[in-house]
Length: 224
Image 1 (cartoon, one colour):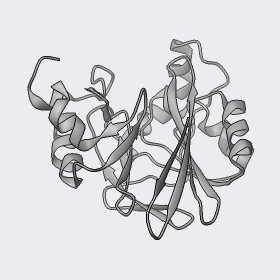
Image 2 (cartoon, rainbow, N blue to C red; image 1 turned 135 degrees about the horizontal axis):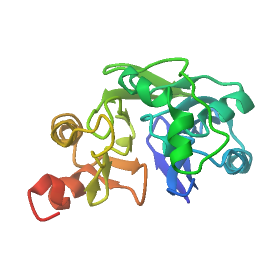
Image 3 (cartoon, rainbow, N blue to C red; image 1 turned 180 degrees about the vertical axis):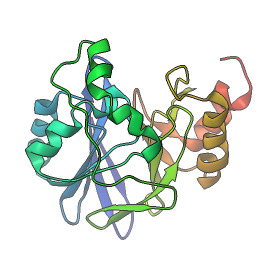
Image 4 (tube, one colour; image 1 turned 120 degrees about the horizontal axis):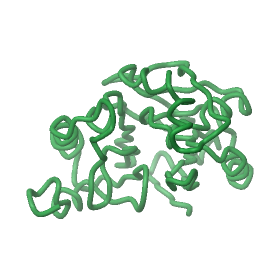
């Protein structure tokens, strides 16, 4: 699936590559002006990710991680080696997850994964860039302690990982999960950014903050 986002000053393209048995939305995002790209959450199936990069005809400069769960990071070390690019994110609070990628993978029958550390931990207020596109970093704990969201104001677009879904929110029954903290992250940090913001999430279809504010049962207080 390919999506396009455009403003008067910058234009981006995105290709979603579902990876691993969890069908995680690994996202290839690029700046149209420069054809420089980033891979967000390479959870596995690295040959498929490399094929998508070739198909898009872009040059990957970075790998960004929204959080440390195996289905989002299982292919990160392998892809870093293949592309020789740095890994940025998540927040250092997810270090315990990246230190245990091998053990986590074993629980789900995922082999060939490696424990690793990113080249740069991210925190609230940081900025990451690809080509001419700058994204603000928001630390949004709850699904995991170190989850981060990437937000581009000019395009009114966000990459939210497993913090928020279309009609749901991230699970909080895994180590370090905190449902109350997750809802605070969404309601205090994300929703105030604006109803018009569209997002790609870690699983399933994307949505907008406004749509979720109005209809997501975890945010409206309705049944769910």
